[in-house]
Length: 123
Image (cartoon, rainbow, N blue to C red; front, side):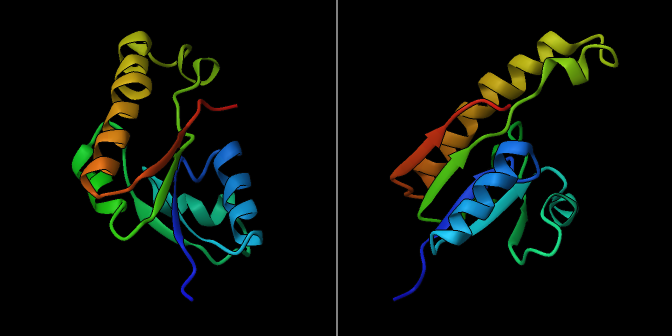
């Protein structure tokens, strides 16, 4: 029986990388999704995991990244302490990423026929 593919949006983050490892241990095939998929190898050194590009504010990229997945975890979010000092538009960007982006993830999942989704914030 084929292992189930489970998407992890935010696969380079603290929660996402930990979740990818837990999914592997549980026998799933995690698909780590990140804005910059090349960072997945840094977040998960020595771990063989499928990496795909996807950005919460780009629903087309999410549709593509979720292709063939059976479930999705959305654990990506913009964290205030990282962005406020460098970004004068933090509030607008946070709403676009954390609110509208999460809705994009859910819409893309529905469009792909994914029936199971878990949405949370980040650490």
